Image (cartoon, rainbow over the protein chains, first blue to last red):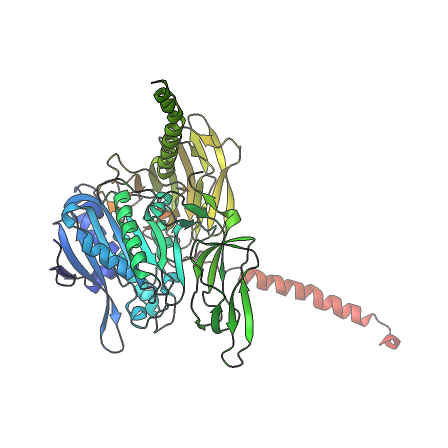
Length: 358
Length: 241
């Protein structure tokens, strides 16, 4: 099965617009035409095993070029659940794509129970522009779900992902990272703690209230087990993060029953309940005081970085740790341009953090 | 020989500790809800009777306080009652918008058996989403570890009515739609014939939103106020002006 990257033969399908826009109604009509058929969710209907590629159309750009999403499908030889893996919903979070590609390469359809759908580039224009937000409307697509077929471009893309991808899943693994500059390593607990733990991050986060209108909230509300992982970014230690990410996804596939084998359990995992996103009031140049590593513990009031004016060379503000005991969740280790309100650091409150196995 | 026995005896607590930790880790990764069966019966007026059977998991008890509910527009949710073989209670709701956390007000929340939740949802205006109470713990999957553990059934009043929600398919009989999930969805959407419009169109078509009665109230106030003011103004002596 193993071949050189990019030369593997795959079956390609283009889903027409109608398929997307009326997907629910069409499926229902089809079901009504054969009312006595056994009630089996589409996801566990076994089709021919193998690799295929589907294109979900979004719209036509002003350039005249079509905008579509590419979904890679690994259809297993045995029945089982459908697991979706998405990456690059924020266009500058590149490490997720590296993980998704390696997962695609390493999985063998003949060994799978169910199927794996990989949406490697969830936001093509943002990826092209190396931007968190979609360049044409500058909206954060991961705050727009379930989207709208007649809304902003980001809403149209979200609509396509919601109905052309998430609606067909039993599990969703949404991979994020720190973006161009920040470095991060943790994952969210959404509606299945064990699924999140199976990824193997040392630090897990379950907020009291989650961000609204994300892939995770859309999936959760529709009975899909989901988790969001944040791993890598800042071009730091990419090979290690990708290897950890692939191992984590493979372990989650074992948890979901798509792969045979025991679920690997990482000892010492901690659950964090409170976290502070630290954003500077001023833009300029971010000058970290020292190199940090996600998971590292820091004391209270410790200076993390200075925000310096590029024009007067004066320090506009100094960012300090917000809690008495802090856990580094996201950090910037290099001297970079920074905007006011940018992600600069994320610090977990160690006082609200508990080990799972205590 | 004796020293070997002492060594073995010394190892027993260590082995027991390791086994206990392994079992605890296993428990932490397992579910404490064995399965969920949801049945929703909708009448033509948009009133839905919801019944949820939450099966207790094999490891620990299902706690009544471990439920949550996502509020939806134009869907009024009545009292939520929990019944089991050992316990019966109304669940108290604590708002955490848009979610509500559900708590057992009798403080006897531990339910060591299957529990049934029942409640009524009344859709108003163009409301289409029927909220479903969601147990906070993950639901166990089938014995093969793969198949879905949540079954949802929706019975609609008419043949032309539809359920518009992923994975919900019509059975073709009794206007019933069914779906299976690996997690509990927080709502299902229905399209009922004869009920249309946006959710904000909650008022009946004949209503003007209270404009008429507010107008006539204003007229009544003026009818009383203007003559009263004129009378009061005339009774003032000239010199006082």
